[in-house]
Length: 415
Image (tube, rainbow, N blue to C red; front, top):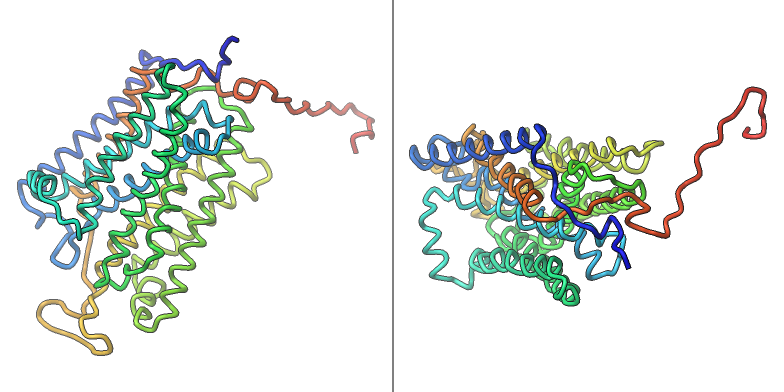
């Protein structure tokens, strides 16, 4: 039986000016990111906005966002392999590729932001298994290996029968990986903005939304014909994930408000935090939550442009949410003596100041560019993309919608 267009995978045409221009822009951003990393390494972190109070700066925001999104980008492949939804099967290769690329971009930012990247060798040879950071080294490397094996089984025809078990392993691994990333914050009992078991499941659902938003934009930029129904399914799925992120955020803050010891940090984030309050309400809730839901479910005609806009807003809102979690959680002072006011020459009891510097922003954007550059090169070298993703190609039994009947002058039958 002949393969359908959705089952025939091809390379993209890399000879056009659009592709060459894209690679040039991404390459320039990667070089800028490397230059920013070198500048911080050479001059020290004194040139950044980081301090003894804020040790994880804007690069960590980008790194955590990309790592979390990497797990969510694999969601499309998991839906096809693990849950048997055949409409998503043509997208599995691109889903696995994007998952690896985003993780590579995020880890690159993380390593270059350490201040002493060479010290990573120590972290890879001496393990403290009481530390969640040691666990994550295994989780991140293992994720790339598992997804690479999963992709190999999809590429190699003789191994196709093992793709479902491999997909199940990848699905479970990505849940564990995102749980580990969320647990970094959930286990930090000294920071009142963290210290919550719900951090782990909240990061899992955040990964679903962020990863699918990036996947949608990458898919729509490939130039492949996209069916209205396939795009609609992905858009509906994105809406469900965005609503779930808002729900978990609501539960997290309501739970903190129930405990008296967290009233101070909650007031800071929700009311008195200045830029962090604005980032929470405007960035996370409105831009990253309510506006995308409005575009995906309320607008009378959900066009591809509106779906792409919703995905962009989800990404921007996700960055704002991670910024509030990481930076906002650090600038709020430690509660060294609960129930007491503390002040000293060591900034105890004082909200820390933090302003992102250009090198920090450049490094973070460079990580994003590296991830997209990996995808752009890979789809030119290997057949990750189906030939056609229109509805009739994805589903041979698809029945097209009837075209609207033209109404002639004086015809009242359509009224």
